[in-house]
Image 1: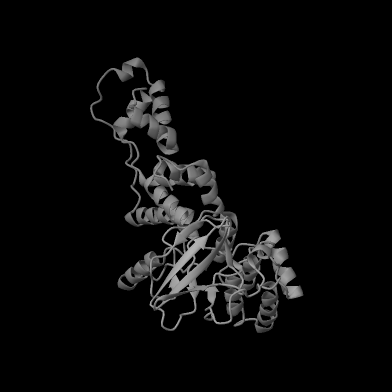
Image 2 (image 1 turned 30 degrees about the vertical axis):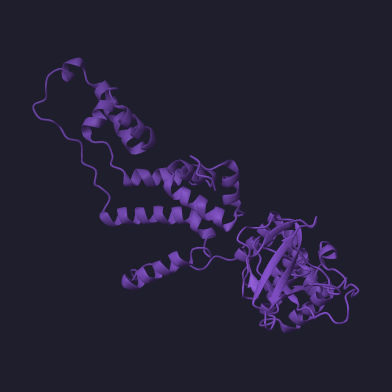
Length: 381
């Protein structure tokens, strides 16, 4: 998020709907902690403005006698006028004093009184009540932002737990029950039920462009046997900086990876590396299809993979919209592995869907086994 004076309308909408990406969500939350204007705007949108106003009044000092007298005489300062506009208690005392003065004759007002009559002093809120009000304000602020960041604030939670061990909470504080998961959107619910009843996953149309057929070997029979690339191949990936993996080649001293777009223009390449995996330093464009190759150096010879008759190693980086939907579902329903497998399959992310089916097997082995067999059929044309 850019460092602007206040949050934009799009950021407010995304924050309230909990559709922002994790990094953007953290940035917006940090801004809200420092900006009272945006915090009040968010509270007003959530219908919390009256409660916040009441809380500020409970924590603020009321007017003293001189300020009330000045208000009754129409001589209040701007600060006093602002307080009277927000505080019904002080506003009522000013009105009572003004009415009382109106009942006195001019002769009664002129002589100086022998003794100053003090109004009854209001009792200040007890210290425990102030602490309770402050705690309520902290809980209110936490409810606006932190509730959507449970999974991205592990370090903060660990620190809080350590502090709690050193300073146990009072016995009177009751533990709050964990909030229930939100309901699924109708479209996701329908797709989930379809997968559960048919034991089949939806095949993404983009797979027709990613899964290539095995070709015909044109080289001579004496050429060295190529090694295999393992991932990503014939699938989409959620991250824009995927990790490329391949089989280690015995005797290889180094590898080099090259990534090409659909126009066969090189968009990324690795330096000479010695491990059988590599991750690009810069993100690839989302929604684009790529193919990649790795070249192994063995002595004075080079061996490239894939090469005919092996198919091209193609993959797609999922669109930002699809990635956001899946990450939102993962955050809100982390234990619903069937739902995540369905959404990943719809996006063509077959490798990630297979991981969710592995997790599903621990609670529903028959469904996981049937869907894994169906997933394998999606990898073929």
